Image (tube, rainbow, N blue to C red; front, side, top):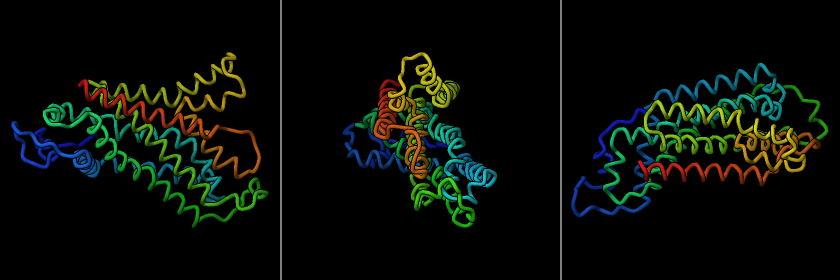
Length: 298
């Protein structure tokens, strides 16, 4: 999946900006180190056809769902509602595919061992890998959603009655909110995948950990919240804050709260936006911290 090529010394030479030497080692700046790793990851993404196929498949699925569900003909908000469930399922799959072997591939080729002989910190390696993969992931997620948004502008001809009482409710701005939140969700899941890649010792274990992570993100955390509510551990008033503990629930609640409920003008509160954003931020930061620790210990 990764498509990387090259020797460890080639990578070290590029990172340092000088030929590889074993005495008088150069001390490149952080921006140069991270920037070089980012460029390498961008080349890897561009060479890996499976990433392109993932983006094309996501576009086809989202267009199909929007058309069959009637959202494309009804407007931006109905389209966002139609796409929410498919995005909850597919975005984590795409994000994990982009990241679950990113660091592991460097470790297996010996590039991490070579880079450690230079003043390159583990967090710099993780930052470069993450940013490079994130650029590719954003394109893979953003492009299909942009295509669907363009299709709504061309195809839309119905007016959804449920939104008629709210002036200007069905607007591209609400759809854009969903797009931004989807990209943020994808970036959080990518951080989880990078952490998996950093702690995995072999490709097979990385794949197994990736599957476990998907199950936890898509099912486990939500089931834990449902159990907590049914068992009385969580009260009705605290549930919207507890949703922030699951990145999937936080994403779903944010989309419903900021792009759907607000359009209707009324309805139950589906999320605490600040808590949900904080939950996503903590998942992102904790995952990248684990990735840096994994690289340090590898």
